[in-house]
Image 1: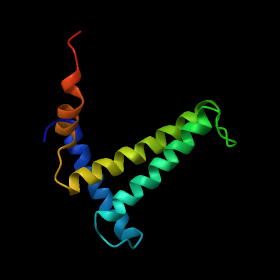
Image 2 (image 1 turned 135 degrees about the vertical axis):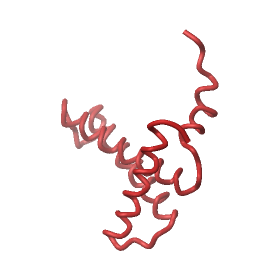
Image 3 (image 1 turned 90 degrees about the vertical axis):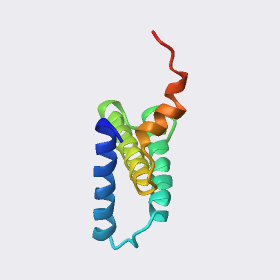
Image 4 (image 1 turned 180 degrees about the vertical axis):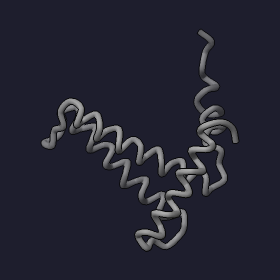
Length: 104
């Protein structure tokens, strides 16, 4: 693994282990996948509230902050899952997404 994302991936996974202990969650990967799904739902809710397509509307900075928090949760649980499954997230993104990048 390389650079900042690899370090972040490892740090986030350690925090997910602390979360398991603090909340009495049985260690394993299943809960991370389920939590990721939950957080994706919360990200969708925040997006809809920020873009005024929900009865719960979040204006200005409040909406931006809610969206950022939920995006961080989705990214965090994605990185934790990658770490536990032995996947280099940075290399995976490069292989899947950046192969389409064109030179400026």
